[in-house]
Amino acid sequence: MSDRYIDFANSDIGRRLAGAVGLPTPARLERWQAGRLRPVEGALLVGGGPLALKVAELAPRLTDSAFAFATEGSPLSAWTPGLGPKIKAVVYDASHIGDTEQLKQLREFFQPLIKSLDTSAHLLILGRVPDGLAPDAHIAQKAVEGFSRSLAKELRGGGVLQLLQLEQGVEAELEGALRFFLSPKSAYVDGQVVRLGPCTVQVNDWTRPLAGKKALVTGAARGIGAAIAEALARDGAEVFLLDVPQAKADLDALAARLGGRTIDLDICATDAAQQLIEALPDGIDVMVHNAGITRDKTLVNMTPEYWDSVLAVNLNAPHRLTQALFDSGTLRDHGRVVVLSSTSGIAGNRGQTNYAASKAGLIGLAQAFGPKLAERGASINAVAPGFIETRMTAQMPFALREAGRRMNALGQGGLPQDVAEAVAWLAQPGSGAVNGQVLRVCGQSVVGA
Image (tube, rainbow, N blue to C red; front, side):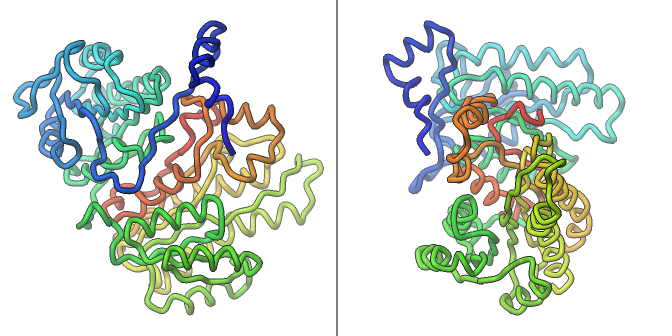
């Protein structure tokens, strides 16, 4: 569904009127398009601590134009505020900040460049996982987190910012994260904190990072599920598309377009796990639990049928199927599991006790199963979308729909593509460096913030 306010606010007359009365002017976000070759199309600025030199080494693989700012010994050309080119992407290494006195380096680096950012700029701060650090360093790194979340809210023109917290010795895992967070693939991801750990496998071909992999997507017939299947197929995966028999026509059409295979299955059937194992004799590398339903009522009016059906589809089925695929070996070693949660599962939502319980439960599933899957080099993570423009949200009352769109730092709803890109990144071999975590795709929504 078209966002008419964004169309208006970005017109000549709309910009003038919005500015005159103080209305927000959300920018049209730049998103990944077919045929694009580089993660960053524009100038990349690198600065900060010792990891800035590692990023400088990777820079030629990310962009054709890279500069250093306030960094000694960098092989990159120096950038001067107000004189250099507009900045499309920024990486600042704050991992060296070990006490509160050093926090001023954040202001000294970022303040001069804010006015030089290009539209849809992507900023990434590198920090350290606070757990296990000395007290002064722990305090300082938590302060970096607060700084990053706040600066993300101050950016304009579609700019986004994330904090990547690194465990010791995981510099080799940086490239995959840089390629995602500095590119338009993360256009609707903002203000997030992601921890990066060790991973023993890497991507061999960045143009097709899932080449040779088999991926299963539930609820794939339409909407977000179809977008996920398209992104995985684009990245080289052979896709297995699963949905209920009633969606067979849409499922077959998508499979024909993507060269995929279909599985007609009710995931709540008592023998669903066995049917799925039999349908995947060669195993899979990626499992995406996207299937979900809503049956909204306030708790006082909640029927047992509404409660049971939502919990069965949204939570119980992913739990059982993941367990069965892992135990049977159908989910291969170094496999990737992604579950679709929701910001409602983080913050709750009136009239959605059943839905919020199921989506929060999926976060618990990722957290609980993460260490278990890691024993075989596998990982599981949750993606939590906010307001996404789908046929379902198009049916919402006008006031609720507008509130959902505007109550985030980017001032607009996301697209199914935004969720799909996050899932596709977490499905990559090298993304085993992220495990048991939640990645919100919500434009830094105030819901659950």
